Length: 456
Image (cartoon, rainbow, N blue to C red; front, side, top):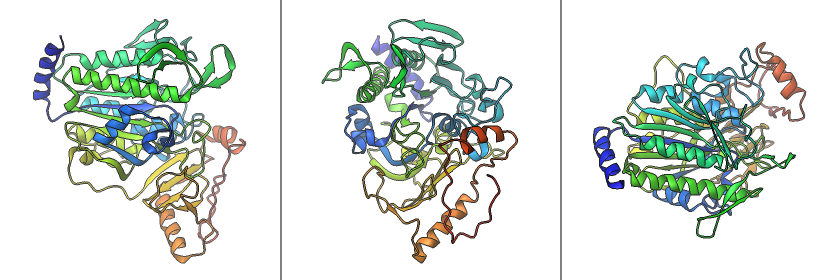
């Protein structure tokens, strides 16, 4: 059977050699510091091998929260354009839920990849409207709104291509990867693209104690990385290991079906880990995420990569890998890193940006303005969790530092802070931000000649 599959896919690869299969896997609430790959304590042998044989970005940015990150990823646009500033601050439809981004923006990750001749699927959690509005042809989505297992991942409740499928005693993550394997094994002359936003390791309510939150149930793995047949809960490291285990199983699936050499795998987190980076305006704690790229058919072993990337780069990268071009009548904020994957000359970004609520981050190779408006000299360091790695120079009177800050502020002028009086969002801003204990009034140095914008 495996030989037959190999022969089938061999024919398909010959037809579409210029168009690789692509998958973007997104984990939920995890920081680089959680991985041994980035100097943390938890080993992830599969991702470590993928990073060694591919590359991993030392500085990749999302946003500090789930929905703003997904808005950036699916549209290729910063929040200044999408207005999705937080999980509770965004344009709403008649049902008072988020107005689907795919209805507001014609060109999205799904629609662009479908238009590029790909079989497309979304597998996992959505949070930002309807899957159909994004142009994905197929899907397997966790039923968050109606699913009775939303806080009990020991079972699965999914919308599978429009039909509800409930499976008792099938872990939610396992059900998603089962669909992924089936979709990518289907015979077709067209390459496939999958966007796979996972729930793991997002904290959940304890099904036996709804007032208590913690890491969800996951299958336990022994010291050899094999299932023991037991489930464990409130074990963050076990969640990390299980994600790694499932990605490893998918890599083996690609090998067995003869697709690995013509597949690009990207893996990243959506925001910093709970109790550390999530909803945190300090330094890079909230925006800094792990990001690994593995493409054995094209990408030469690179390992640690110093290039700066943020999530607006995903759409232009995928479209370029697909041999397409971005619509000229639309605006995209990202920069394709496809040349890195394809072994072509590459000119990286000078800066990356992120936004959450009224906080804005901006980073170059050396300098960082964080969500509180503090300025840091990062030197050659990329790990904000290391004590003393970044030097706070916010109050510096050094003329060189002041010049740097002014140059960075010129960039931020093109990516302005939110208008808290925007009629569409004003009530949300007042309730969720201005009257909330989370409110942060970013620091502005007195030497910046900047008139008050009257937005508060």
